[in-house]
Length: 172
Image (tube, rainbow, N blue to C red; front, side, top):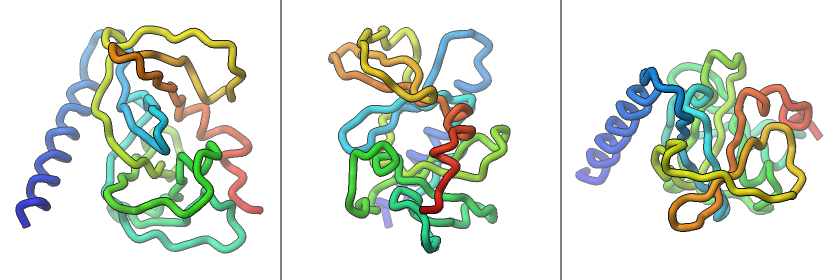
């Protein structure tokens, strides 16, 4: 029981910090950092929505393996996408505990949530420096950044992802 209360308290604190970061007037970039299959991703705070614990997902027949199905999140149906599976980083079913679902901001007009393995907190442009490379990347993958420990983080533009043809094509 204490673990559930501690988890709720952590989620409440993180939600308050996310809201505070969204309300800041400065123009510095800020992201929600998440991890999937050992990779670090940065989700722009203005494009990310609510964070949910794992909820039951109803599978959708004849859909791609990375589209896990549909979940009822606070009374709204959301398509649930395994982020690691979408990027081809995982083939088997994901472990569902203690994963989280990060919804897209409702302003983006898509009822979808990304399954992530770990929340890694908030990041700002002051904490990260651009990481140069020549690797090709899809339009929805923005810059790459390195933190003070040298870990590389991939910025994921959710607004561009929400319009990507491959992302929207969930049927086989």
